[in-house]
Image (cartoon, rainbow, N blue to C red):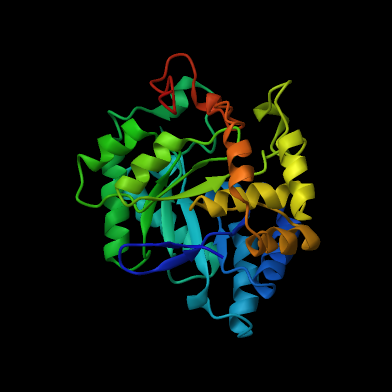
Length: 315
């Protein structure tokens, strides 16, 4: 399996287990299955509402010496209601407590969006704080402090466009070490990947399979299916793989991290097995032609009349 390298020499397995949308009753078992079957990269976030259950798996596995804590890369994310400087490190400490960990390997600013501390998810314009009220650099500087305090080893962002990355980088000497964004054959984001590569920013792909199990309110009526795409199906048959494995392999092979979610044991194990074969040049050329700049996670849930978040992705 490919590994993503950081400037200090640390390495992260490209293929990890995602936990977005994993139900509380299933995620503990899913994380244990993953760790017991070779995963060494687990992706979490406070807003997923299941970090305490993920933490139960970590506690059991690490205390049982089945897997060592230092061998597992754990990522989590700062939610939008903790962007004020006085809220960042307390939010991180809550995540560490829930996960039963003393440190994170990677902590990300989940969105370039700020909402009021008492708001879980915004429903109206008044729930937001503008980036004039809480600039991204204010939040970022506290994440830098968290790294300096040893609470996290690496810091980065998620859902950041090139303009937002540039804007943040102009105000800090601490360039984000990761940008986690939606990436798959329908949304290949080559320009963003090239920018991140030039600036030594690693990239992780979320929703690599199309996130078909996300809430209905986030879905379009006529959205295309990656798993049912004829090109992906043909390539899967050619390699004796399933469609999900082709999509995961595509992300891993192009040098990004990739975090497919599953709570099914066979799928969890099968997703990691994607590392065991290679796509050839013909496969990659065919997949390159599928790009249509289609987002499954549109960000429209932040774009409300009366607030300043009119185009989250700047596209």
